Image (cartoon, rainbow, N blue to C red; front, side, top):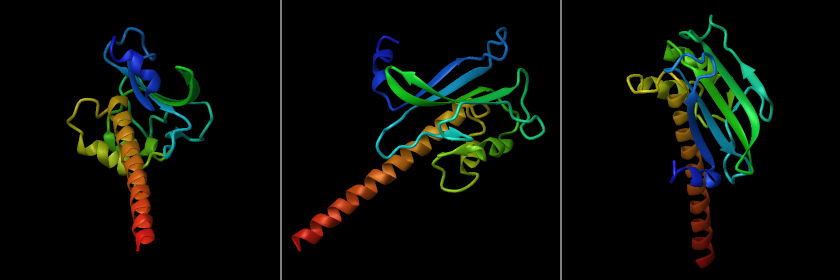
Length: 169
């Protein structure tokens, strides 16, 4: 904490892992928050349902099976070290990773290349720790955000290089 805590104020994306709020006696279930700084060039935070809204959502058990104490997602607007941030939160875990596509269908700016890519990425890591909870989901969303940011920066650099070549010719 002594080394990490002071750096958080400069981060554009922080994944926070906390104990669940669903059952105070439960010491295994996690609440995971993706804290995404707003106003970062070439980056748009992932949101749930409606960008900029305040949402608390308990998915239908018919569409996303979850062991006790259940599953809850949230999307909020907050201040984090004086910065405006969007926070995507998942508290709980799910039984069947394939059903995660239900959650994915309600995410915006997930930076996926196609519908179902988030779920597909989670399925490819099904045997990894966190694959059935928010740690895996938020890490996947962070990886996709980094990929998208890299692609945008690389495209800009290529365009600038082409302009320089054209100007020199």
